[in-house]
Image (cartoon, rainbow, N blue to C red; front, side, top):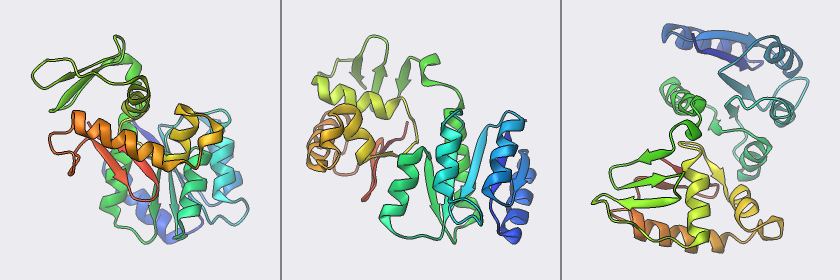
Length: 225
């Protein structure tokens, strides 16, 4: 059974999430603060962690950083903080997704399903297929829907590979720039816009309405198979 830990000091929300998640077959553990949440995470294997940023004892970003020190478990952050900076801080700390309060339970459940899809490492599936193109991670090749090879520059391949290896996960501008170009280029978002535009032109049937290489405005990009 898939085991999910929810860390939040809102008792009413904890109750609602426990009911919703349990009804869908998940095993659920609850923690009212960051300290007890970290202890719960250490006690047993988890498939997903949901963490509120506004905890009474520890900032949620610190909890995410602590978890990332020893665990690759997917993390979804919840927060009433609306600023772009708070989202970026949480994602850069290691969170996989960010949901702003108040939210619909249905939306959160969809984010949970998307995060759990990453529980099977892409390395076990070296060929990733969409309706528009196929990515062979082992051969480092991209084929179009008709089977012809699509030529990518080394930088375009690096950007695409980073996205494809993290399906449905938001990769922030800063993360991508740091990984592809290096730490000195973490603010050069114009680099990303140019290369993403080129990738969409080569891979998406409708580059102006991308289905697979999607933008999270102001935050980054994600690959949707």
